Image (cartoon, rainbow, N blue to C red):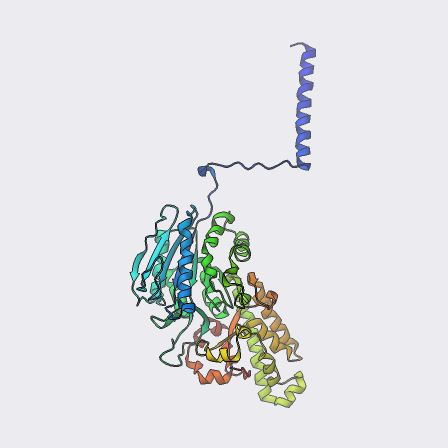
Length: 472
């Protein structure tokens, strides 16, 4: 090669390199369209696997709305999966007790108990009979056995468990008469006369020796701090409603879609974003016909790792309230009122106006008629604290009430609400009654003091002293 040709080649190469660099610099400023290349299955990054465990009861109620409606909801919730294949990263197991007398697509009216599992390799609806109408869904060993079986047939990176059936919050184990079940909690089963109590569920999860990505208490009135405190060691998150959750767990197919499509990793951020989308966009909220019940729906996703702060703040607040009761007894009502600007009675009048879940949607007659089902009354924990503190010129109590409200709010990774109460003011619910009702129902011996929440906070000591003039 001649000298001229050699120099020309060098210059050409230099110009090419400079042009490439210029193009690279320009590409930093002007982005072209992104082209997604579909990789073969074997080259795609593996998604985290999830198994959704569905533990459900039709309730066994004789009336159509309360009992048969739940059986239909269960039928619908699993029926969706007949029309769509499972992806490789999601599996589904269920244990269902149908109401006796309900005849549907999967049951013949005998009210038996069946289990089922589905995944990408097993899409047949092969229901396995595991018990009759006397199957005790509240028995901890039965719950634990279902969890263990689910992990055996459908192992995964993370597990989600959904409880679907009637819910009634946390209540002491006390009955009014032989015709009324003695335990309040989740998944009412009138065939056995039981709910699953908080203590029974806690024992079951302990026996199962499983940590969950989420526990979904898909029943009404289950976002109680008593349940949340007891179950938080067994899960990263708890999803529950303080109001009504009618038919919401019907949309389990959208929960499956969330894990299949939206969660590319198992980070907290991705999970919370997925649940937010599940609640606000995916769920068919029109299923309740947008009547007054629809207006009282809410769901809160609680970060279990932040529950301890709620418990500590509740104890601080409870101790401060009890100290005021003691001081009032010691110095007398007149001196107490002169010091704080209000009496204990004034405080209790303020607390009587605290936000009562469901109460604003029912007449006095309806509340009275259903009192046998509502053996205690579920209120907003943050609202109780705020109302109590607002009565006094007491900076310490106000600070502790605000700390409690902040702790409850901080634990809420997601708060979805259609209710008239501003969701920013919606906190965890808590059992609330007065001293007269406490004594009348013999709550001292009923088991509230055995709850983890009460052992940590002394809340029952406050319930036994307060005289809030509840209208019930």
